[in-house]
Length: 224
Image (tube, rainbow, N blue to C red; front, top):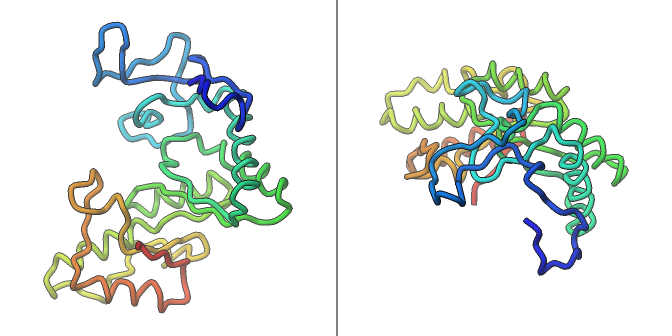
């Protein structure tokens, strides 16, 4: 993680083993498939409770409890804003990162650019209760994808015309917390053969898109 070819162009920061919690590969034995937690480390707190603690997802897991890691993420965010001029962020796999980090990070980003940034987080949980818990935990500083509504579309498309469309919004985030809901029909994770495969069949997609694009509630997102 020294990236010598960059010669410090993008950042003077150097990554070392103590900036990580765990890895899934042992260079000494060449073995993979086991998660190795570094000595003296603990997995990040305030993450999804699936599997007990879902801080670790894959590869080399950053230690967000380390002050230098958090500061480099802030520095990177400022560089990214300067470089791209974006008006907001899509934050991936937020269920694996401590809930207290993103409010701190977003405060720094918005203070830096002097304006509000629209931010949506991808917390993949088809349970509105969990999504509401997350939104409360981050002080409603961002929106999240309405995963529950996506699964309603999935099940409706699989029902072959026998789904009760009066219930299509039941349990969805837009029904109870529309200001924090980003609605979508499908995304890269829901495609066939993906780990989160939950296909919305082609015949139903026009109906699903009509629902998210023609409603007042929610921020619709089109998958292209």
